[in-house]
Image (cartoon, rainbow, N blue to C red; front, side, top):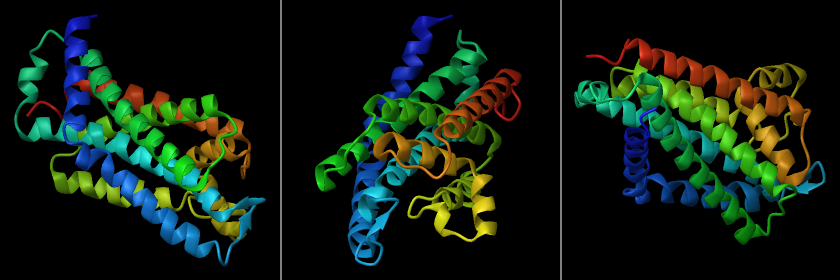
Length: 253
């Protein structure tokens, strides 16, 4: 293991998104605050409680998870695709780093961005509406695990995409719809039976369900299933992205 090279690449990835925090951190906070104001405070007048929890508090875990997974995915996918389009990957591939080490550095960079954004929205919820956190360690663990899974997925998407348009299509027709259909703003128990079945095959639903349980203590399905799905996504996307990197396919121009 080339620890020096690995650390250098990690620091580059982390420094890249911190250097433009106005684009990578602040938008998530502002968007979440708007969701709280518009969906929370406004709709709470019509939907007072869900499962014994005020509506504003109920949607907050979903906002945390949505912010976490979108930022983790965006960090690795955009960084990898940018390297491909700028023809910088050949230089990186000739460095004394294995495909595993390169993948690990990108994934860790995405994890850091996902965790930072998730924690920032968590703090926002605590400060704005006094959101209680039932299990802080469980919440942070879940944020980390989901950041890892979707950072790996982002790396995979970045390797598969050949243009910004392709990457945008992958994200807009997969990640965004599944996030909104994952129970961010409602309990799936409020849906008709056929819609509940569709929710159960949506992996992002389990991410939202899991963190809602660690924060508020309420859930629509067993939290063990949410942890299992998070571990499964982490393993599948990590192996897929690392194997594709090691093969050199879709990254050597």
